[in-house]
Length: 449
Ligand SMILES: Cc1cc2nc3c(=O)[nH]c(=O)nc-3n(C[C@H](O)[C@H](O)[C@H](O)COP(=O)(O)OP(=O)(O)OC[C@H]3O[C@@H](n4cnc5c(N)ncnc54)[C@H](O)[C@@H]3O)c2cc1C
Image 1 (cartoon, protein in one colour):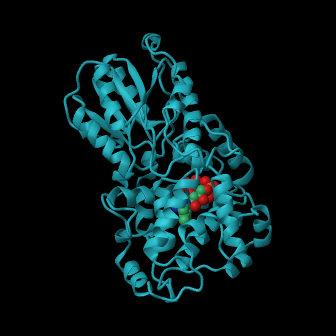
Image 2: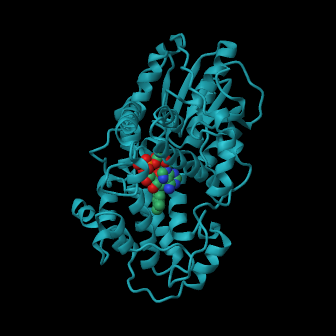
Image 3: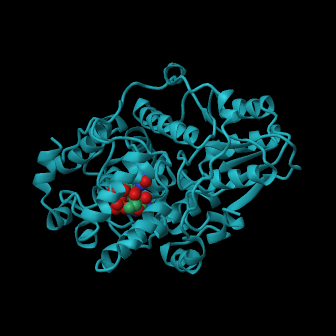
């Protein structure tokens, strides 16, 4: 058996039938280091059934533009080639996944279907539809979290402090090396023509703006190279330099994690292997990668209305409501924020960085969202503005981390009450002076002007 059984969860308990096993790939778009694909391979080998991988390409997705689809499709083309090299056919299904995935399973007379874990609402709805329509069993495998989300905790955690011990308790059990994907006899390949990627692009109905980002290469190979460069060159010094947006000290891996082109578990294994001599750096990185990132999945999985104002902790809603009518020195509309048209050069630089590069440095990202709270007419509007700008422009947006990052900054999620001030109430405050104390703000502004 290749996969820890606790990673696997039945979504529809129907008896397995004769026929091929299909991995319906969604969040984890890679051939290597993929527990969901390995679980499907296990099932196929049990009975000697063929293994197929299918990806259902929705013509649009909330918040996504050509920037995101281009990154994803270039990665998927590489994944198709890697799968074919192991004798596994890859099918790109065009259309609404809730409809085209069951159609494909029916057409191929699939005996069982495996998919990957994703707590985002749209994905949950697709899975529910497939679980109902498919005559065989649908199994979900958490290939994104090191400790599977439902194993780490059975409930929404209050804060990192309550979640951290739960992750560390199960880490040794789940942070295991990845086995190789076995090779399959390539009979099934012959009947599966290679994907027509031009037709896939033509099937999309997404905005051409924002377009692809020129300075980041998508795909599993580039992701692995970026991880290797980070562990060799920038892990030493990460703990001290990660909050300086000018230092280039962070890993820059979040777009690869978001599109599943790199397994977070692979990053954890490589960072652990490089830990000797850099203990504080490795531990600081693993705290972000394992505790903070997996806490975001915990929050979204156990909070159905996860991106709504009503989902904020009671204390935070109370304090924000009490200060909703406070005088704002500056007030901007969502369009003014989007156009980087605030009075403050530092904030505008962060917004420009986001629009031009599809990224904002993590420290500036907190500042960026907190100022949206301070300069919006209401906290509810601030939440919507920050979420929609993050989703539209960030390569790693539309992710549990984006939801939690915005709700932490604007709404005190996973945080505690601080001293009361206007507009923020008891939400943690940040100001420009604090940024200037921490790093060379003028150099940051100059880079993004
Ligand atoms: C307002 C706001 C919005 C955010 N939106 C997103 C988003 O859309 N997508 C996204 O992936 N992250 C988001 N984050 C979290 C964090 O800023 C990014 O994960 C990080 O900056 C990505 O850069 P990196 O890969 O170089 O990080 P590194 O510093 O190299 O960290 C390593 C990894 O740890 C994880 N991580 C780091 N910081 C956090 C954090 N605060 N919370 C959860 N996981 C973290 C990420 O997976 C990251 O790739 C947001 C944070 C804030 C405050």
